[in-house]
Image 1 (spheres, rainbow, N blue to C red):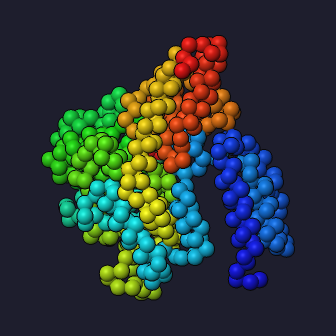
Image 2: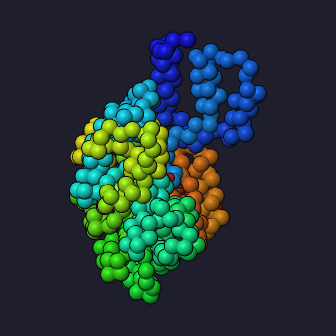
Length: 470
Ligand SMILES: Cc1ncc(COP(=O)(O)O)c(C=O)c1O
């Protein structure tokens, strides 16, 4: 065995390139399910090893039908970004370099690139100059990290060191969140021992925005340490809590404010859209994703905390053997729950450097314009109703009743022109369309809208080519 096998790496690059070249033309959904794919992969663990080039060839062949063209331009499921060319290439390098992103001793390179990348993120997202920033696996762990800092801070203010003493016997912490808060906020609270069932659920309006007046009353009705979980960008409607009002209410009662802005926080990168996140800089912590709207390959989330001391106290670990490069050198692990991890700052740096500030603005604004175009195209079909105000990149639609909506989702997925998934919005079936990919064009939207309209017509029992054609 040699340390470097150029033929294998070139063969792998060729396979990757061939796959990327099919993204625009292959059916967007997978063609085989897990059990079918497992048949090709399974068998008992080989007694003797198989040549690496054979392993890679077989892997690429056996998994091809199970690949989802989610980095492609017509994947509108969940909230899913693609992979910008520079970000993908930097990630390849990061894998080849195989740096442990733990701290500046395990890899000065990983620490340096992350230091620059997080500074650029902080600036782009309009966060306070001294906020500390870490790169997590995703917004889920960014929410965990931020809420761990929140828990540390609010209990610290009443003289309880939660890091040292834990939660048993601690003063109760009140957590308030909008009724439409993302499920990962509840998951974070569960993991942190705060519980998701004890959250004071604050009524949301028809778009999913937490009502700040109801929040103010709820805060006034109790006392003690409190954390308010606000949202910038509802996963279904894209709606934003009024952060100015939410933060004002929280401040009156000394509560910590966390903003879950997994994709919505990126509105700050556009002067046109920034009013949606007005006031966000006044919060105490923020969670967002780079693998959504920044279009870096999975995985990368971003957490920021206004008070670096609290952030570090909640996350940093110390052991004699975990030597540090020095107090001024960034230790990536001080800001996230993980210890050893991949150097995910490489892809973030490459994405931001290749786009520049204007490129990020254009990416965010383009996706929002395409979402409006999609909504307008779908609204021309009598069977389809757009349920949300399309303020960002999310379009939420319904076709007749629940059954017709679910049938439309299934038909669109089968058709393969584009991919989207269903949800339940305020108790009724809906389908979600999220435009988050750097490569999506107007032609992709028009083609996809036509496929969705045809599926909706069939599901609603309307004849083809009925009114509603552009
Ligand atoms: C508002 C919000 N928060 C958190 C998340 C979780 O993000 P991730 O899956 O990257 O952890 C999402 C995912 O869509 C989201 O929309």
